Every structure is written in structure tokens, then in C-alpha cells.
Amino acid sequence: MYSQLTKNEKIIKLAKIGNSWVDTLDSFELISPIDGRVIGLIADCGPKEALQAIDASEEAFELWKATSVDTRYQILSHWARLIVEEKNQLAEIMALEMGKPIKEGKKEVDYAASFVWWYAEEAKRIYGVTIPAPVPSKRIVVLYEPVGPVLAITPWNFPAAMVTRKAASAIAAGCTIIIKPAERSPLTATFLASLWDKAGGPPGVLQVLPTANPERLCKVFFDDFRIRKISFTGSIPVGKAIYKEAAKTLKGVLLELGGNAPMIVFADADIDTAIREAIQAKFRNAGQACVAVNRLYVEKKISEPFCSKLVEETKKLVLGDPFLPSTDIGPLVGEQSLQKIHSLLADVLEKGGKILCGGESQGLYFAPTIVWVSDPSARILNEEIFGPVLPVIHFETEREVISWSNATNYGLASYVMTSDLKRAFRLSESLRFGIVGINDGRPSCCQAPFGGIKESGIGREGGQWGIKEFLETKYLSFNLD
Ligand code: NAD
Image (tube, rainbow, N blue to C red; front, side):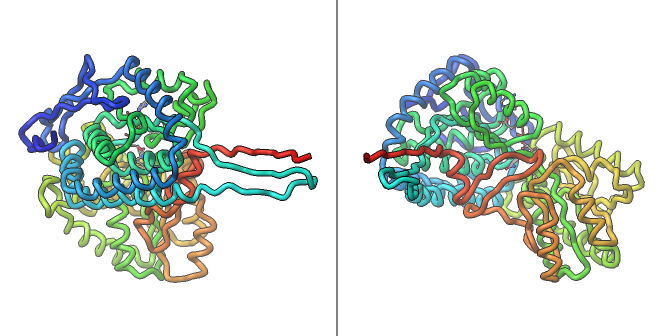
């Protein structure tokens, strides 16, 4: 099907329900941010398809939870191999549907596959425990069992990795999973599901239901008792709404929400490292990442030379067609993102800010921008930007910068650039965020726990923590009297 994947043809994509690729009565148009062209007609799933998927998920769960961990390992590792083999195709799909530059898309595919490899192995390590009992005639055994059918709701900004990070851990735990991909990135999710089929994944274990109306579709999942866990990645308002919905049938929730990451650069930092990491952490995916640096605090005594080097390096980034191998930054995903960035910039300029480079846009293509901020109340420091704009402000004391950094309801990622070991420890213990990168602008990897505190979320994905989200603790008490 994806041999049609050129920039000039339309793709027709179906939903993956049970064992079949299902055509729906309705469909919706998928528009590429590259040039505004309609690139696909996508199945628009509704309540009928939702119920079919829950039935299939429940039926498959009974079989899948009973599979040996070796079977899970074999199928998951086969899936990982196929994902890597299809790296180019997946990178092209992402470029087409949400504008990610090809060279970055290939890195995302490796990152996406790394979760599948990791959880193929982690399935083997769902260890239970035995505990000495309070009386000689008893034995205490604790087991871990899969929670049941899972609903995963994924965002468009990492269309491959957000699917595999959820699916691989749930499937390794013995759960079945229904994926509702973002409206802007259904092709990546359905392509991954086709690779799951190819890897020998049993029917009903992984299903994909695209929709243009997530509220209508997901209401059926939220109301159905059989779905036992919701794993959601997306914005804070939608995460809060889901949390409320989940309460109706007391489903477990895993919420990976937005961020407002500070990066603090101390005068004692290695400046070249700080600039390299700041650029990676800000401009990757055109700044459309939950862990993107949202505000850069630089110590006053180095702020001038730091900013001029930062501007010099930022100007080297290539903005353009995501299909070109030289492109670093592609288009924003949509008009709404563009409007938000313009409005944040207008606000900061009104409050005495100054654009040091960039600031202009053509269509959805927004130039990488550095903006100097003089008023800490500027909205740009307090809201998630989700675009290629980096606000910079100076600070004078460690104490004040810690307090500014923590003065937010967000708590996902934060970054500290310093060569002072004592300071690195002090800062990593003072920053109220789920992740602290020390001289590291790209801390996320399959081995580590990824997630936020405060309004940035509940729970963790990745490493040994990700699989536990999909396991229930069961206690067996044997009375041998
Ligand atoms: P979004 O909240 O608008 O959408 C996320 C998903 O939720 C999409 O699949 C969407 O269709 C679905 N959705 C929207 N309304 C819904 C409803 N009423 N019921 C059920 N589903 C609904 O977010 P987005 O714009 O796609 O993604 C950007 C946001 O995601 C940013 O805030 C970003 O920080 C966050 N994000 C967080 C992480 C993380 O791991 N913490 C990773 C990537 C993105």
C-alpha cells in the first residue's frame, strides 16, 4: 500500500480492528503541513467500531495473557526488526503527515524500535515474590498479572515512538491495546499495525482506530468497564478531562502531558556543550516536543557572549522541505501552532523583549528564533511554546533561578549546564521536575523512566517502570494447616 507514497498521490487508510482492516462509512481528509495538500482519506471510526474493537480486545486478552513470555519476546523482537527495516518508509510517512524532517524521522524510528526491543526482553523479567509468612503454616506469594485491555491515545509530534512506547510495554505485560492515534498522524500508527501483523502478532492484541472525532469515539471506551487502563500522551486540558472520565469505571491512568522546561546555564558551564545541547533540546522537531527547552536562563556575567554564539549556531539550522536530507526544521503542524507562536512573540515584544534572530514565517515554515526577554511575566516563559522559538533571560543568583524554574504547574523536564559537581547535585535535588538533564539536552531513552510531576502527568513510561503500569499485583495466601 505504501508504494503509493509519493508526494502526489492519495493514500486510503483503513482501521485495524480484530483480525481485519476495516473500511468505515465515513472518512476524513488528511492534510500535509508541507504544502496543505490532501494526502489521504482516513477511516473515521465511531461508536460501532469502538465496540467491535473492545470485543476483539477482550477476546484476545484471554489468549494473550496466557502466552509464554518467550512467545511475547519472539513476536515483539520480530516487530522491532521490521520497524527498523522499514525505517525509510516510516520516516517518509512522518514527513508527509506531520512535517518531521527525514533525518530526524529516521532517528525517531530507531528510538521507537528501541522500546520494542527493550520490552521484548522486559517481558521475561516480570518477577513475583515470596515473603516469609507470620505463621509457620502459611505461605505468601505475590504475582504480577496484566491489567486487561488498554486504550492508548497518542499525539502527533512523535507519531511512531509514542505508539511503540505504549504498545510494546502493554503487550509485553500481557495486555491487549487499542490505539487511537492523533488526527494528524494516523498513517504512522496504521503502518506500525501492519508491521505487527507481519511479525505474527495475533488478532485483537494491537488495534488502531483513527478518527476525526476523538470525543465521540473515546466516550465508548471511557464508559466501557472492560477497558482497564488508559495511557494518554497529549495536552494538559485533555489529560485532565480523561482523568475525570476514567473515574467513572475506575480505570487506571497513565498521563504524559505537556511541559515548560527550563534550561539553566551557569557561568562555569562548558559553553560549547551548553549551546549544542540547548539547540538540540529546543529545535528538535521544530520545538514541538514536550521536553523542549521552553525558557533559557543564562547567568548574567556570560549572557552577552553566550547569546551571540547561540545566535550564530541557530542561524546555521536549515528550514525547509522535510523531504530534503539537509533540512533541520520542517513546517509547523498547523495554523493553530503558528497563531500561538505569533501571539507569544507579540506579547514578549510588547513587554520590552528583542528578537535576536529569526522571528519571521512563511506559511507554516517558522524560522528558528532566539528572543531576549526582559520581563519575567512574559507569556512565552509561562506557557508551552511548541515551536522553534527560544526565549532567553538572564539571572544573577542560583537561588533566584531555582525559584523561577519551579514557579510553574508544569513538572516534566529541566536542564542544568554546569561544570561544578556540587552545584549539579544541589540543582538536581532542588528542581521539581520528573527529569533533570545535567549537561544533557536529550535525556530520554528506552531504559529510563520518562514522565512528569505536578500537572505534567501521572506515571512513567520506559525502562522497568513502563511495564509496571500495565501490571496488577495479586496476593496468594496458602494455608497449609
Ligand atoms: P492533544 O491533547 O490535543 O491531543 C492528544 C491526543 O488526544 C490526540 O490523539 C487527540 O485526538 C486526543 N484527544 C483530543 N481530545 C480528546 C478527547 N476529548 N477525548 C479523547 N481523546 C482526545 O495534544 P496534541 O496537540 O496532539 O499534542 C501536543 C501535546 O502533547 C503537548 O502539550 C505536548 O507537550 C504533549 N506531549 C507530551 C508528551 C509526554 O510524554 N509528556 C509527549 C508528546 C507530547
